[in-house]
Length: 167
Image (cartoon, rainbow, N blue to C red; front, side, top):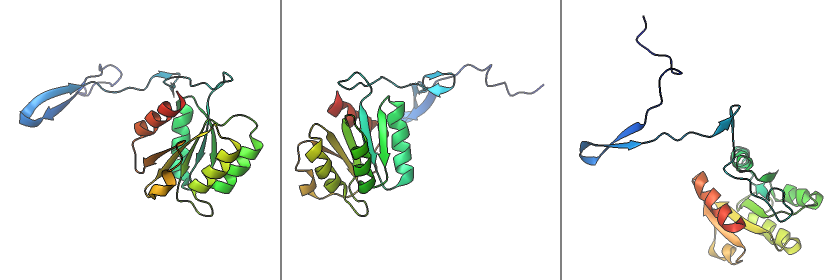
């Protein structure tokens, strides 16, 4: 008889961490809410038309962009994605609906995120902007519609900034 129990038969236990002084501190495991094996959004953010709020995600690093877009979709947002400023401008020109927020890297080839934001805000002044970058100069943040998040960041920090701007 095997001494290992089937995981499905074993109840989930709280993780125990040792605090300074060998004291035990219990912390419940965090579980994602699922339905049919798929993660469910925490909430369904909606725009003024009643549909989901739309976020344009622009980053030249494909893996970063894909991960952030997946997270934003999981949170219930409609997401448009672009790999650079020129692609973002083309997507905006084709997109007839509202864009509530632009999340863009600052340092990208061909067009900086600050130039992209300036051009998009001239035709979509209601749109909010979050710059994400490991490097930025102070004068890039002069527009009050712009928020900055320094890379690397925790995904929860991005979610908090988005909620502050769109709620």
